[in-house]
Length: 45
Image (cartoon, rainbow, N blue to C red):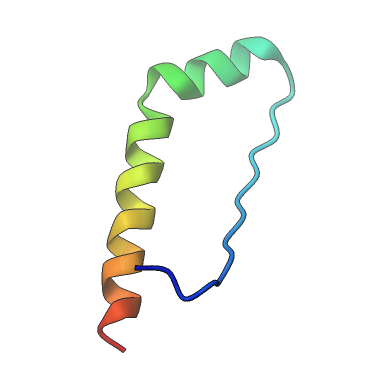
């Protein structure tokens, strides 16, 4: 459920190798899980 709020996160890398390393460690699934948990928490407030 969305109340129209907006959350933007940006990640900057020094180079494409650093970006790939971060992606290989599971950045996207991990970040998605963290934001889903935050959304669940906020809904209880």
